[in-house]
Image (tube, rainbow, N blue to C red; front, side):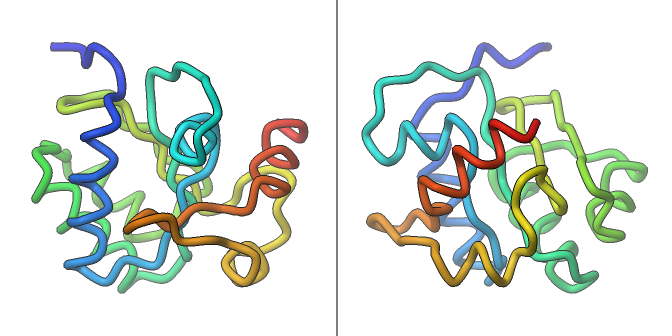
Length: 134
């Protein structure tokens, strides 16, 4: 079954699971802009994550908590920190990005990031730079 599109409540569930698993991440892309209050519509959520095997294992655990059925190949790609991992299964489409275009490093982006409620969100400047570069 193909997901019908990203809903804001799904970001809440994912942020909660990421917090529980201590995932080092930032929401980026249109989903992040929506969380910042900009009027967009998106079909997926983009997550920029720190590229370490332990963070990858945390991501896998968190995604399973919110209902993602991950195959072994996808799990290996996340744990290995593959540049771009696209997940198109229930409960919604998700891109896990370890090397987004236009952003030099996770550490730099994290230093500029903001937290809105429980959402760790890339700085709008980084969101725009990534979209322009891609």
